[in-house]
Amino acid sequence: MSKIDELIKQYCPNGVEYKKLYEVTIWDKKFNGTTKKMQPNTVEFNHVSAKLLKDLYDATGDIKLLSTGNFDGFTTTEKASEFINKGEVLTIPSGGSANLKYYNGKFVDSGNILATSLDSNLYNLKYIWYFLNNINGEIQNLFRGSSVQHPDMVSILNIRIPIPPLPVQEEIVKILDKFVELEAELEAELEAELEARKVQYEFYRGELFNNENIQTFKLKDLFNIKNGFTPSKRNASFWSNGIIPWFRMEDVRKNGGILNDAIQYVTEEATKGNIFPANSIIVSTSATIGEHALITVPFLANQRFTCMMLKKKFEKNINMKYIYYYCFRLGEYCKKNVQQGNFNSVSVNVFKNFEFNIPSVKEQQRIVSILDKFDKLINDISEGLPAEIEARRKQYEYYRNKLLSFEELNCEC
Image (tube, rainbow, N blue to C red):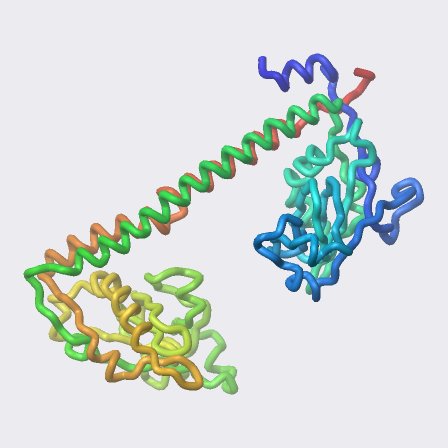
């Protein structure tokens, strides 16, 4: 029997009492719609304006900055003396998403609603925080608003929480703290391994293209090139019921480098007969430089991309997946040859003169096979290291849910 089982058998063998959140916490402000019973009093904390928050940031400081967003750093006593709070708090953002946080120590806060335990001899605040994080999805559903969403605090304060005796709460916190610590260490190891694999992948991607038995071709020798364009937005018919995928940078960022579907489509009329053939490469040569993708269907792309269409005489001698991988080199070449102006660009002449090393078709296929395996290991969330990281997170969520699930008390323990 585990220690937690022993404690439950000792303190609450018949179940635990459930209390509403307002019965176990005290908050730093009075909420609209609450009764005197729900909020007989409040606790005071100092708050800093969002405008000053970034000015207080000091990476070498030891005072925690808590904010509603991702900004979560440190400041110094000297900078933030009039705003410093000290103690144990649970935070709910006043707007945005249900990103609940727990902190114990010196801190500066901006934009959060803060709570403490009503009685730390009965209610462990970190236990309450763990429970609320376990039902984060339910709490998110209690955020209201059409643009920036805000928490419906009356509903949140009425959330029912199992409250076992304090020794059980403390043991659960100890177990979950250790689990979080081990998970963080393991994730750090897995992410370090993933990063090492990426470095290894990039190394092999470079080395595999250095082959003694190769021919060198300039880009202009292998490909016909043409800029993409954007059909007129004024003509609504171009953008209604389209069947030709129109690719933008958003497609590459969202869906990767091998694409057969686009976020937006246009009509054939909108293309003005300039449909690019399937199995062509697009490379961003203005604004954002050096991103690329292999498009496997007939398509159109916007003007930020230059399209590389393989010349017919090379169709039997060139594997376009090999070219896709080689274009990581082309991307670096473009970044090193940027022209400065109103926005970054790569000149057509520079672009045309990039050189490709082309081995035999058999060797191209061998290289593609190796790089496909690396690419899948690194990028496919259903396999490899990313999946293992996700599995560890789900394992933690499973055990957290098990530890925080109690039979409700029907009689006195």
